[in-house]
Length: 236
Length: 236
Image (cartoon, rainbow over all chains, first blue to last red; front, side, top):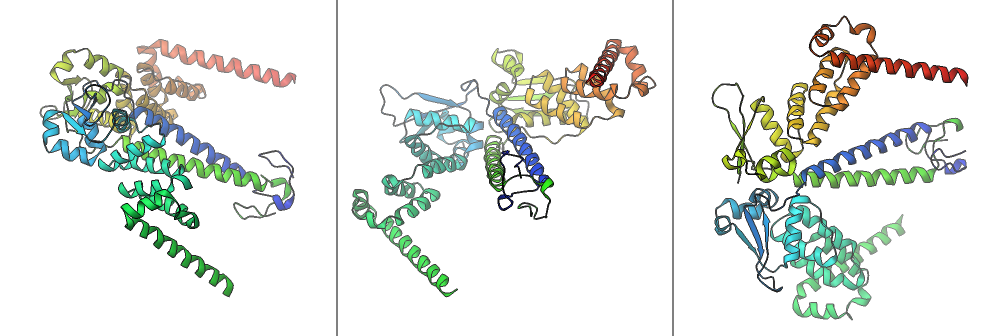
């Protein structure tokens, strides 16, 4: 028979679907693509922000930016900040210092990261590298911007490898990044034989031994599970 | 053979795809669904507007709302209005009366339609019926909110039928709604034998005969096309 889709000939044992199901699947795909186009247009409509500074009523300042000169302020709108972050909401709606002065100081962050963070609040768009993903994850955690935190976690999980696993594991613990913790633990416990010789491991035992205990507990639980699986498969 | 998808048996002449293409199509569908979920989360993030009035710096008033009492103002933010509508941008950025007073008067509109319009600017969400779609199309045309105009046109095209076709055709011409004009013309020219007896037709000849001419021109061009097609199919 000849496949309607790839046009190759195939035998009966390589047969897939009937024509009807093929056509249905095709229609479904078209529908999904239309839905994607509509959603993309919606996102484009909602994140329009051609004049970021116009009618700005608040500025954010990277208070500990150590680059040359005075810190540059990032203009924004209180209405946008409160709708994206419960922390900004509490800060601005309760007439705290920041609301009255119209200036929000953000500690421990570079101007670049702050500007990128604010831009994300308006557009839900960002171009990440690993450093920026870490900086933004910290800000997203601090200001409870869950959508951005999820995005950074997903990106960092995709960049996980044996070399950066312990570092990322430690970082993720500091900033409550559950997805990264889980992915890093899986990677680390798959390579336990190489773990104890690593410099980061030795440092971690020194600085935060509870995190090392968690690694060993995960490893142990994995071994117990594997043994139980082997056992049950032997019995059947 | 048995279809992998619907599990029904089928003959060779009802065969669709090979197994490989079926699996690929399945993966594509999963990917598209994931993309849809991500886009939906993005839309939800961007349209968060739990406190519409907070830090509002402008109000919109339905200046000719004839419902009881003084017109109710709809609070909004200049930054949002200018990012969604080039008309609001020109109005607010050029320090015209509206910008200085912080009040934008919108003529010929009900409070309900105005509130729905403003809400759409923030959320890109709206629940339409035919009346609301007409009201919003007028506002979207006036303030050049193309995304909303497209949406209303699509909705009204989906509601087109012989009974409302002439009325919609006239309305669409008044508000420059190309998609509705095209769809209504197709419907009307398919039913030319019934057209001239209609009350709306008689009224339109009276009020705006150029629009009637356009109907006849479309009908004529359709007849010429049909004749040409018949002619070419006879020759082959």
